[in-house]
Amino acid sequence: MKIYLDSNIPYAEKMFAGLGEIVLFEGRSVTADDLVDADVLLVRSITKVNQALLSKNERLQFVGTATIGTDHVDQAYLADRGIKFTSAPGCNKKSVAQYVVSAVLVHAEKHLINLQGKSVGIVGAGNTGSAVFHKLTALGMKCHLCDPILANTDDPRTFVDLNKIMECDFISLHVPLTRDGEYPTHHLFDQQRLRQLSQDQVLINTARGEVIDNQALLQRVESGSQPSLILDVWENEPNIEMALLPYTEIATPHIAGYSLEGKANGTEVLYRALCQHLGKEAKLKVSSLLPQAVVDNIRVNSPLNQSLVKSLVHLVYDVRRDDHIFRMGIASPDGFDNMRKHYRERREFSTLTVSLDLQQNDHLLAALGFSIKH
Ligand SMILES: NC(=O)c1ccc[n+]([C@@H]2O[C@H](COP(=O)([O-])OP(=O)(O)OC[C@H]3O[C@@H](n4cnc5c(N)ncnc54)[C@H](O)[C@@H]3O)[C@@H](O)[C@H]2O)c1
Ligand SMILES: O=C(O)[C@H](O)[C@H](O)COP(=O)(O)O
Image (tube, rainbow, N blue to C red; front, side):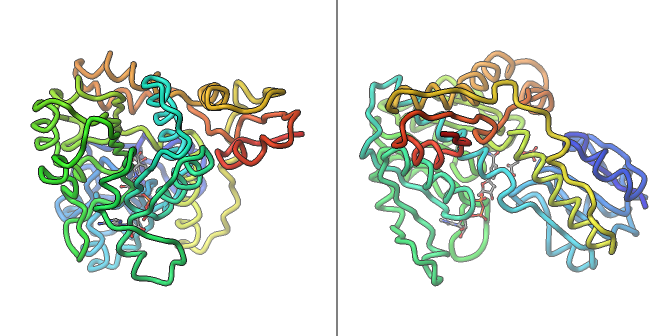
């Protein structure tokens, strides 16, 4: 059994070693010739899994992507060939939500904004959008959800339409990239919608680059009085529209979901699914392989305010560091992918235990995802 693994799937060599012979590949450059004898193919979002990639392989039985997004996989083609497919829904939702929390706090500090009562429009109310809702609501923000697909189900939450979202102080995108169906998201933010944004608004994209028409966005920002932009994802990665960069407040190379926990969760989901597919017991747990966090506890003995929350958040994850590294490195060859490939170890808020002297602080910090001790 030959298991082909993207070399950027952490802990995968250890997790899958007992299930077959491991062959590592580079996700961006892998070709049909490389995969001729693969029985199992485990990818991340940079590998387009389609007929062209699999045309020379006649024995593939299982494809897994250690990601939430699945727009890089031609699932209909896999189904036609009877190849089992698994993704990892929700695996890095906390990581993305923590990125958004850090970015919102950075924006608030820079523009002297009190976040209490500020409105947030969340487009896409699935795993990640819901996690963002939970955290930003805990910060005192008034969050609205837009999800016409869930709005047509028995989901008990209140949903608004996109027009209402366009009035919000912050707009955060958490939709899959889709081109078909009743509610396609490709260029959901097109020239017309981008024109509606004012300079007092903040547009955050951690979904997929193609959800915003990047050329229309460039025209919009070049025409003046632009909204603040927080962009983790871009059209045409890794060859992004560099002219957008100077207009962004925070810019990163598709790493919002790159916490160690988020990536490791993706690995474990695939491990379990492959074990099940092969009729084997899933004996390993990826959590046992994670290292201890460098900073793992802190004592807080004063009431929380926005500034103290920001300090706690940034003790674990500060998006400005990623923004800085990105701006320094993007001009070099393979700059976009290099930062992703050699991404530093980043942990989630749960790895920091906050010891609280004051009872009233728990709810906010627990909702943000910190571990709490009294
Ligand atoms: N930047 C990153 O590192 C990163 C990490 C994880 C996920 N993502 C992206 O974020 C996307 C969302 O993640 P998730 O975990 O919330 O997925 P999810 O599948 O749990 O939720 C997506 C939600 O979007 C809704 N939706 C679909 N079309 C819509 C539309 N036109 N308008 C409004 N809502 C719509 C769906 O009904 C669903 O509830 C993923 O598909 C992936 O592409 C990016
Ligand atoms: O969909 C996802 O889960 C994310 O976009 C994913 O974390 C992106 O990382 P990549 O797979 O490109 O390494």
